[in-house]
Every structure is written in structure tokens, then in C-alpha cells.
Image (cartoon, rainbow, N blue to C red; front, side, top):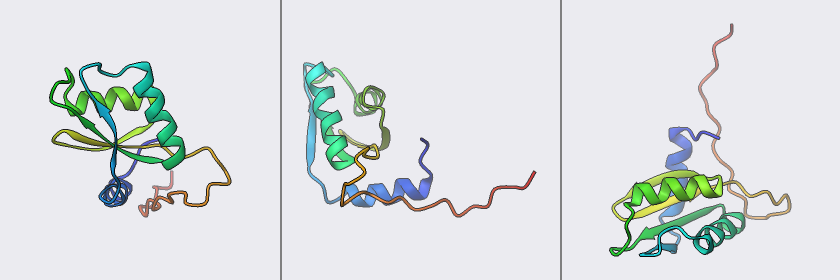
Length: 109
């Protein structure tokens, strides 16, 4: 799943109002942290994380590794914070994030 720039912009604006719930510290990306992020993504679809000063990871490294482990997309990385997105698999979820459609027309071949 590749996000378009408009979809990334939409998700970045939604991420402004959410709290940081994942903290990467000196223990790095352990099983518990990956499970916490995975559960949060399933429940919320969009999560914000922070890399603490005592971590051995940069924010970009932590975001990319956590995204790979949770099958999500990195939306943005700014300073020590990052935002991840993964659509929920729950069909009955009421507040599902609806991404904007790509308005570019595909060339006819």
C-alpha cells in the first residue's frame, strides 16, 4: 500500500490532534513494543510515536523498523516523533479513516 502525497497530507493533519502513545527507549523495538503498536494500529489506524534520548535508534530508523514489523506505513518523521498508519481490518469500525482518492487519471494503453 503506497500512500499518495495528498493522502499523506490528510493523515499528517489528522495526526496533529492525537497524543503520542508509543515510546521507543533504551530497550529498542522489543516484542512488547511491537505488540503495543500493532494493537494500537488495529484500534486507531493512526498512531504517533516518539524516540527517547536514551534510544540507540534515530526516529527514521525506529519508524521504518516498526512499520515493517506492524505492516504499516510511515506517514511522517519530524525530529524525534513519527506517525504510522495502517487501515483497520475491522469491518464494523465506526470511525474508520477514509483516505482521499487519487484524482490523477491513469493513461489509457
